[in-house]
Structures are given as C-alpha cells and as structure tokens.
Length: 88
Image (cartoon, rainbow, N blue to C red; front, side):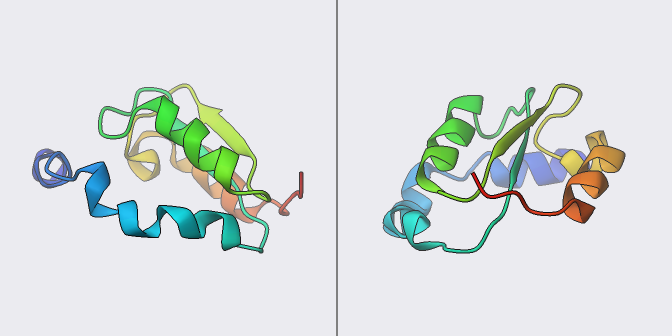
C-alpha cells in the first residue's frame, strides 16, 4: 500500500541519481513536469532544479497533491498527459 511505498522511497538519496543529472540537458523532446506542492519525498526546490535543466519541459504545480499524483490528483494528471506539449 501507500505506506510501504513511502517507506521504500524514503530510503532514496540524491546520490542514487547523481551520475545521470548532467544528462537532463540533453533531453531534446518536449515534455512537462507536474509536481505536488505537498511532496514529502522530493522537496519542491527539486522540481525547480529539474525544470531549470530541461529546456522543453514547463513546470506546473498541483496544490492538492503530494508525491503520488496518480492517487492525489488523478484528473489533473490525466489532463496533463493528454494535453499537447508546449515548447518554452
């Protein structure tokens, strides 16, 4: 369930993905970032950090969600998935 999911992901550290961070700027396809304002796994500053490194992925916030957007805001997530990509 959700509690087990959070326990597992609470063990992740930024060092787990450090070797891939410099590759973010090489992503050349449009995308988008949707981030829950109440994320207790990855702070909101991390969303801004990622968005600054992805040239074609605008950042949007979901005020009524945490880390699990699919559970917390499924309608918003679906709308974002179905929307046409917008290049900055």
